[in-house]
Length: 200
Image 1 (spheres, rainbow, N blue to C red):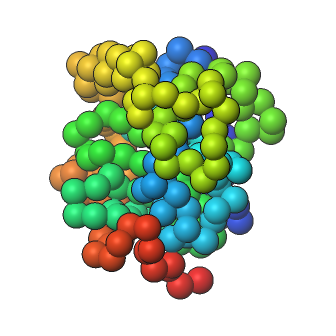
Image 2 (cartoon, rainbow, N blue to C red):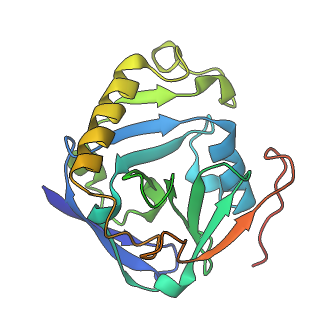
């Protein structure tokens, strides 16, 4: 198990992800239109690859600790029932996606990982590519296929159930003891493919 340093682009928000290894979570690349809309909202399309994919590591709330700049945390929902999408107010660095305070799932986004070039060895290889139909360009054949490959779904569900039993949704850097987001929440009513960008 390793610790991965976390840091936003400007360095105001910092933290650490504890007990991280290829077996402690699931690394995947998501091409969904919502992830791409989130990057556009932040004016941070550098987050995505050439095809519009976002490199994500699925882990738990309890493994993530924000040590500096927590007051800069903000969250966005592209629709009322959508995911909580976390970012920093200071430099609009995307942090992670969460479902709720009670679900021990955090999709940590690669741009928030200050890994000194060792992310591949710590997180392991990408295990799957999902929602390829939303990719900007034709994907290589090995990345195409089901929206959610069965082996990825089963792996994620098994881990989610185990994490829930272990109570790994607490403590959370994203929700307070009452289950409310710690940062200001914005819910967009506009088309998710044309969201408005936050002010600088």
